[in-house]
Image 1 (tube, rainbow, N blue to C red):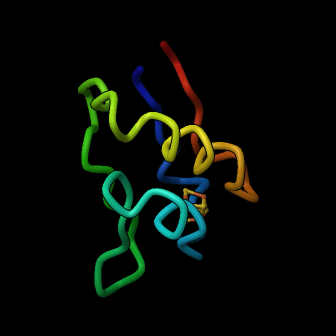
Image 2 (cartoon, protein in one colour; image 1 turned 180 degrees about the vertical axis):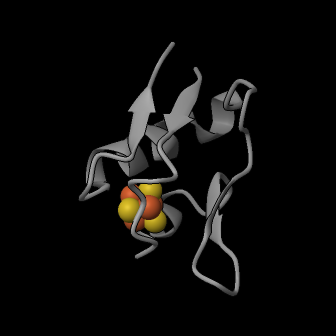
Length: 65
Ligand code: SF4
């Protein structure tokens, strides 16, 4: 499973990081860090990652494969 991140849309509130802290985090400037950019999300984090995609209030996250 790959996730695309629209960094321009992200507003940095961190709901995704709350749901999937091993996948998403925010740096000190509230900029989103997506740990698996360009790679597959490991199996053990997929469920949490899907939840994170669904809770993003601005639809900045999308499952692409
Ligand atoms: S939930 Fe969406 S808007 Fe909020 S930090 Fe994550 S990607 Fe950005």
